[in-house]
Image (cartoon, rainbow, N blue to C red; front, side):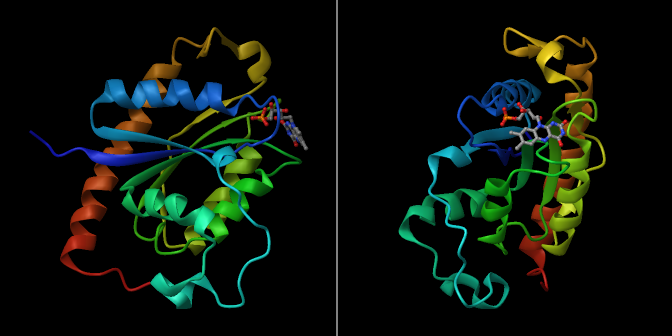
Length: 197
Ligand SMILES: Cc1cc2nc3c(=O)[nH]c(=O)nc-3n(C[C@H](O)[C@H](O)[C@H](O)COP(=O)(O)O)c2cc1C
């Protein structure tokens, strides 16, 4: 039997009344059904994520990066992940500040790992947010996955915790298949040779 990969599904919105957990919960269900992953839903609303970073860069500090104790479990859950799905809304044509802060507090946790995106929003379905995230994650040596899901006008496109589009589970499977492939390839590569970030 093929070994499972640890998949962290990050809920990127933290505001009161947010829709993010509905999307993340459905994505987590698709990932569990897929069978290739042990799923960990990482809800950023459960962490106090400071906006002020330490003087040193996480890139150069490595394990000695001075994170507050409140971020220890976030850092270890991201470190344990072999793959990520970032669930993001679109705020002013980008992604939420909480997600940027969570990304910036970490470095090795993202490196040489695959990241896929599930977005939602108004007419653009959160695609502006994803375009920005792709740039940012590349800077962190992550590998972004081409196929993801975008839900335009999510307020009419979802009912009872699931998307109305019957094609959505198929798109999710494609994304998860690609994520499994990359998770396996990159996990083997990281084990064989430390990534030179
Ligand atoms: C500050 C803010 C800015 C927003 N800007 C956009 C936007 O640029 N494009 C868009 O499609 N929706 C935008 N929206 C609408 C969000 O996509 C919608 O509120 C969504 O529910 C936010 O996700 P959340 O409920 O998980 O926080 C914005 C919402 C907020 C709160």
